[in-house]
Length: 313
Length: 204
Image 1 (cartoon, rainbow over the protein chains, first blue to last red):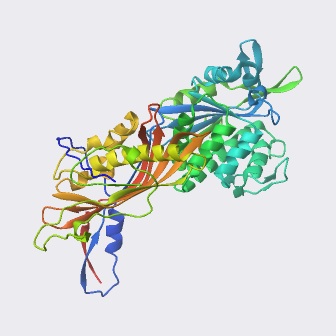
Image 2 (cartoon, rainbow over the protein chains, first blue to last red; image 1 turned 90 degrees about the horizontal axis):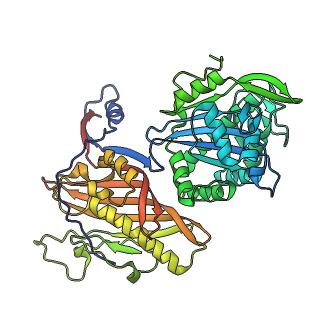
Image 3 (tube, each protein chain N blue to C red; image 1 turned 90 degrees about the vertical axis):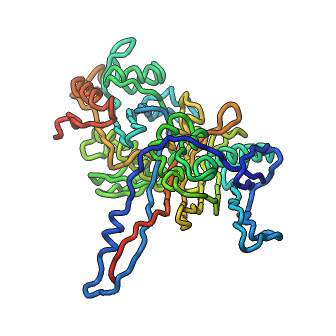
């Protein structure tokens, strides 16, 4: 045990933060008709503050979901989930830009589907392809496989996902209903993998579902962040379930920073294109104009003030 | 693990302190065996900081656990001292953010009214009444990378008119282990009640 006190002095003074008393004052002034006894009450001034240092400005995370078989290096698999997520560390805003796996892009040794970039060119190559398309260079690349996904979702716990349509997942037979659904880790994986039984059967819909799942995870993180050890358990699962060159402290700071994002202040967009066939395989010729415009719009503030520009209005 | 906060600051080695604390110690002189006469002003000694690990240290050996608790305790006590205790009245509070990372410190200056006793700067004295920190560590393979301190810091500020204002800070402070063995605060998520009651007259 020790005794301490500070002897600080100085003149710095910063502005006063706004106080949240208006609502309480208003409530206090609502009194029953005919009341005549004056009462003097005192309302305390309570405020909240939240900030996390995970860098400055916007951190761009390229999140890749690999189909590599259990036990294999996740980098050896094709990526069916490709999302570029921008988290603005000062404003609490975030944007997710989904890139369908079949986007046909120019790679170092010729044109190929985007989902081969990780396998053939590694994380740096995948980041380069995304940069070429959107004009945004990812700061971080994280890759997960099925096992890693299940591990992380197990640590996160059940998530709630809003679905605009009802469908049954291809595997697991999960009945997804229109509106709010609650998924455990296995159900979340079935939901994320499903494409063929979606109403349009398209990868665009699946990429949108990935974004809905990300939003559900964000809401869950914010709901549970005060539970002792929760954020540490999630980080630990991420360290085991993600392949990344981030150090453990960097991962921890990023996970903590995610909860500064307000789910109601997020934007999402899928890069669209026209269907085609190349060497017998389905491909999507990306709408390069849309991709560039979306990238330009989002890169400075993690917002899409001009919308998704995908023709959906 | 406990440490007391009082009127004279002195850094002490954590190696002399061991174990996790389980009780609050309020070192009010009036509670001691040698109570001062009633007409004397009792010393304004403060509550001890209680630091307790609740999760994440299961696989740490006792020495490592004691070291990280001590290091985090140092950071928290430095922050509490500079943010809420010391000489009053005063105008300077930004030194409270010295244990913060640079970006976190910059953001904290914008929230200084919610992270320090700046709104009670005219007080003649501030005393800690309850200082509690529950730690959750992120440890992997015996190495501790960071942790969260869930804190409840309560103070009584004596104002110029001799009234007392309670100040209460609740929430989380996020910490990282630095390469040199020290720790820094890289984030905060807190609620602060500055006890500045707004008088409202109503009829009942």
